[in-house]
Image 1 (cartoon, rainbow, N blue to C red):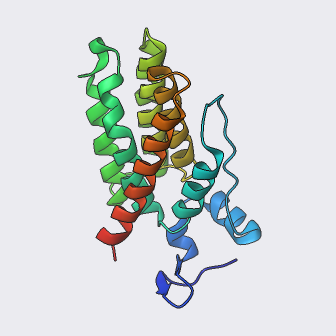
Image 2 (tube, helix red, strand yellow):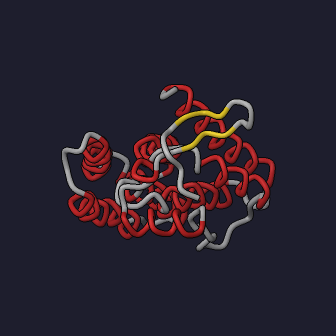
Length: 193
């Protein structure tokens, strides 16, 4: 479905996002136009609530690419606390946040942000603990959202994987995080209404 203009159809509870605002990536726009929605398969092993994840993925469709970047960064920020202690003040964290804001403002290209994203992902490679590694991947995927919106779902999944490591077999903790992610979608939508 091609959406023409970001407007709310209150009678149907639908928010329509212009295709060029939906994604800044041509490939993603082509998929969206042809299929109506991007495929967002889970790429890592998770103990998750599949119904809540599907609800989240559906809600993310209402965000423009710029809004999605804000959302992804907000999802990731609490997980900075779970980085390995030696990496919590790594300058690549600030580099990633700054690059994402610059991308949103049109001050850097997708290619430049992608290169910074690789540097940010090196934090995960430098992590000594599994929790630190997945927390860092949460952040790296959030930064990568500035390149392609598909990375936002991955950021949310890495956040769940981090919760799985912190609280093994605790589906209630997973649901708390998924609900937080859903609330953040609503917050971003309200801020930009």
